[in-house]
Image 1 (cartoon, rainbow, N blue to C red):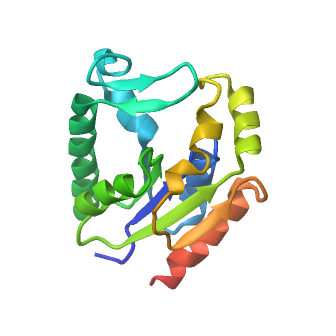
Image 2: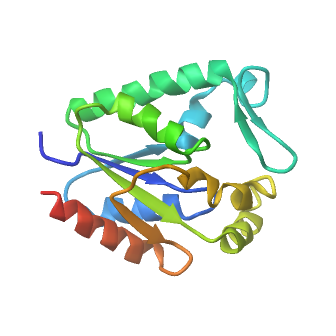
Length: 181
């Protein structure tokens, strides 16, 4: 299998990960699938999107993950890893709500695979402005996640979507991918 079949983009809500991921699909050689936190959330039953044992979003934008949601998310991570082991190349658009522990869960699922870990940084004010413009997030989520998702996480490359357009960020990531072989 060719090296680096997985690129993990980690950043807070409204940090620009999805736009960067779409640009990566356009500039990387070959076909890349894109999945992430929104993919797994959309697959969850409604009862786990705002119920006991599921994903909770507070009025201030804080996010909690219940045990049943976590169990299904873990299974989903291993399913994504199985697709990579079967030959798919995958870009993951992620939010490590618990920083290094979120990365550890992916490290476990992706064990033995070559992964490019990318920090997508965006200052809290810019992220909060994007959140307001989107209108589909609880106010406070972007500001609260802007820095916390990066705590203790090890990266191969970092981009700042507040100071560079999505395509410029994608080109930097693609360059690092190419250097990996």
